[in-house]
Amino acid sequence: MTSHFDILTNMRTEWRWIGRRPSAEAALRRLDERHPELRLGDEHDLCDLVDLLESRGGRSVLERAHIVRALLEEATDPDIHRALLQTLLPGVVSVSRQLRFGEGVVDEPCEMVSVAISLLSELLVDWAGQSRTYAAPDLLSALRGRLRRWMLKEKEARRAVSAYEPIELAAPEASPLLARLHSLGDQHERLVRLTYARVFEGRSLRELASEDHSTPAVLQTELQCFAIRFLL
Image 1 (tube, helix red, strand yellow):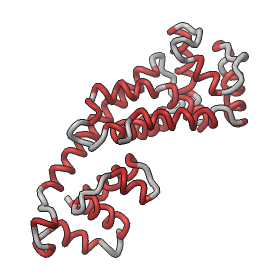
Image 2: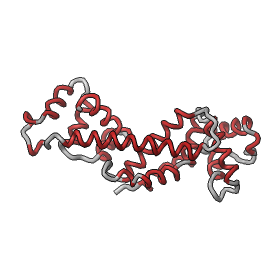
Image 3: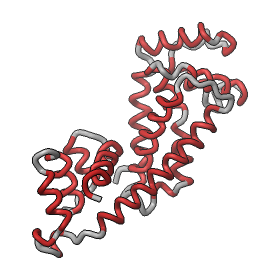
Image 4: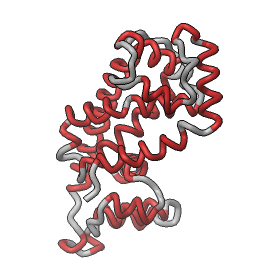
């Protein structure tokens, strides 16, 4: 079974490439020029910066807070965005743990962490350019709120879907959901096929995402939006 730690390991491995590419070096130089008070001249690239933001990185709590505030101000830059996302991953796990990793809402804890990372990335886009003294706790608090709202919507969607009988317990013509899926097949073939596999065949979100060449978080969001718009 894939764990949320596998997701974090993959992101950490990816980051070691992203954070050291030339564009990441250039992004750090621009950050240093715009925020000289942060004293980032000795760092080579964004990987070094993210390492600096760890508790053992050598900077005080207040200094780290100032750096995170600057990262949010400059988060319209995709490399800075990714650096800030990487910096906040421990907080993502903490927030997911507070919400019991989506117990009763998702099939596996890794799905909850994946959704949380996706929502945090969207949040960074929404807040990019803002200056917040307590940027990290503010972002994680907002993430917690978005995750709670997502969980409520997901519970409602599952409750609505559970009202339909599985295909093996009812003839196809007796299933309103199946009839509705058939009527949408021409226009939304992909989502109809994936919804059928998820609901009637009981296939896991991870398996379907792998076949669809997407991620569980993205696919889950797509299926939820499709269900709310066309099926409920």
